[in-house]
Image 1 (spheres, rainbow, N blue to C red):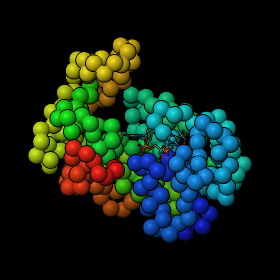
Image 2: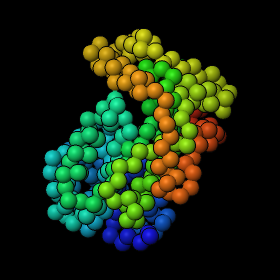
Image 3: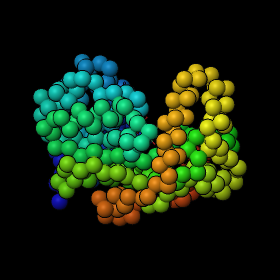
Image 4: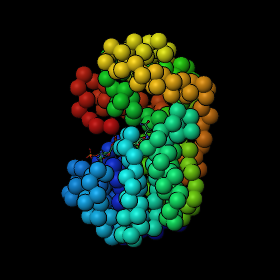
Length: 280
Ligand SMILES: NC(=O)c1ccc[n+]([C@@H]2O[C@H](COP(=O)([O-])OP(=O)(O)OC[C@H]3O[C@@H](n4cnc5c(N)ncnc54)[C@H](OP(=O)(O)O)[C@@H]3O)[C@@H](O)[C@H]2O)c1
């Protein structure tokens, strides 16, 4: 059962790809919500503990989303508990046990060590990655990532947010770790073909380590960084095809959004135009 939450629900990273969807969906459902980032008023900065109290004031529930490669700072969860937070929904990463994601691994451990009610949400690749991280290569017509043709569980940002909202506002998912995928798995090559068909422009995919090495070296990345990335992405290739988990549908009660629907919508709003007029 959903109850309307009147104390503001804190959403860290509340201006980013997933956080702003969580914020919007909470608002539409009538809950009080507070987005927090360096751009909000008051500003919230993971690197500045002096900004935490303002964000945590009056908060009992929070969606905890860390920026990429940003560890959860020591003291934040203590500050949250001290301020009256009782429930946390942590956005982690489905790659955590395969290619590793130290910032969210640390955050999972830290959250599990508290007395907070908690749900861990582990999404696979976001469908929206194709218009954030991968936008430039997609627009240039060539994406290179050393994951071979293993099928991935691209999941829509709106579905991730919908699961987060359920975990924040109902009691049905306390203590759970939810592995989120889309309804079907696609290789990056298949995903690029769908985008090419929708945009009418070719998008080639190179899934080989050799191709990735030469691109990253040309971009000026040091060899040791490139090799570490090749090794980590290689683990995703070695894992083989993702089997969709069905967790979005199980939690939200409707099917997860097909990747092809995302592609059609993103192409129609010009996500892969020469200049992207819209954010993800
Ligand atoms: N991309 C994927 O496929 C994928 C899959 C699974 C999990 N994940 C995980 O999802 C997370 C990223 O989510 P996202 O893509 O929605 O984020 P995002 O779009 O990159 O947005 C990052 C958010 O964090 C805020 N932020 C950045 N630096 C900050 C700082 N120093 N202090 C406070 N706020 C800061 C940003 O706002 P300001 O710039 O205004 O501060 C923004 O709201 C990462 O933890 C990643 O590991 C990603």
